[in-house]
Image (cartoon, rainbow, N blue to C red):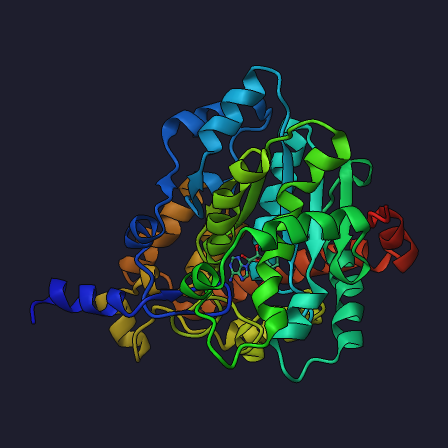
Length: 383
Ligand code: TYM
């Protein structure tokens, strides 16, 4: 096998579903497989026009990279038809940095376009999909996670929570309308359900589809919806988009991000590997410890590193700086060059990142600690 064939074979093993992300990511291939579209300069230029401070780093550096109908959303916006944002969280534990990434970007979109956000907390999903999860635990985590969401800085006047365990009659009616129009065979093909899947799981996609149509029902007029999330959630939008015209709604649009890496070699940040994951509740000291143990693109010995140089493309520390912490293009280019040239050693980079991360966590936690359950409750849609 040639090297190219080998890489292709590995990419073939790539699995991306709402419940599993594994294998070597080949995002170009994924876009083709899912039938989404790469973001183009046209959409980027429109965002630039509305942002006073230029493009967000997550966009400029390409973590957000793909979409469905985002061009249409922007066209309607320019004609004066405002969209709303919709995103969500399955509250199975504490929030990690990977979850924050799409939320940070969603806040930026809320700010530049001055739009409302509907945020769904799928405590039912986590109860149904995890055999060991007691319902009360996921309901409690929903409130804990909601504090992180508000700590990101969304405008509370323009932010609404949907807590699935507190579904309203309008929400339930929409979910049932969706459920009636998706066959088991479609759901099985899209989500891989088997005879062992419980029947709650099979109905659940209707619940995640529902917020795409809720704003239209609440406002009494067809309302465009844009969903910022990692690309793992896209299978939901595929079925929702099929159903939308049958119910007289606009198809929801989506803007997708790649997966923010964990601290181990390869793979996305995932709570299932807590030692490679930075939780928003980690003490800055613990987070520093995790960073100091991170996988990097470094060589076996210092001598080899100086001679051969490091491999930034394989290095989590580099990617954390690239996507989140180092916005200065010149500094990131120098970091890359010095790493490749063997001038920069992994210990130095880890230490610098650990400091930035500590500061980030301290600031986030300060905001988070001020948010009460009552403040969250006030934003939950109750009728
Ligand atoms: P959940 O709780 O698995 O993830 C919450 C959000 O975080 C994104 N995400 C990541 N993004 C970048 N890098 C990572 N390593 C990473 N890990 C997770 C997810 O794509 C998601 O945007 N079923 C959903 C809850 C949900 C939802 C939605 C999500 C309901 N409605 C609408 C997005 C949009 C879930 O369990 O997400």
